[in-house]
Figure 1: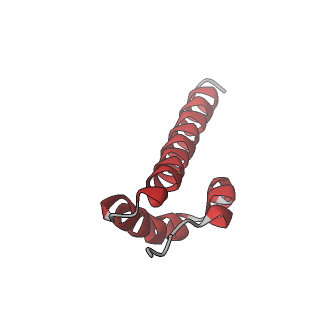
Figure 2: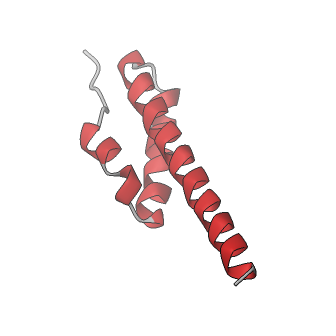
Amino acid sequence: MQETTFRPDEAAQFGQSPAADVATTIPHLILDLESDNTNAYVPALRQLLEIILDSILIIFILLILNFIFTFL
């Protein structure tokens, strides 16, 4: 029997996780994707997608703030 690496509590915290937590989580997610345990694929992909979307949102907000403060 294979042991699952699903960590549902981490997925709920990605919007509030510091960069250091994300940096340590990504290698674990990569291991989940490389494993033979197919039950780990979807949660790992979902967590990676949340990290990417959070990063894009932060960049977008910073660009908007930069644009606003440029014209003040």
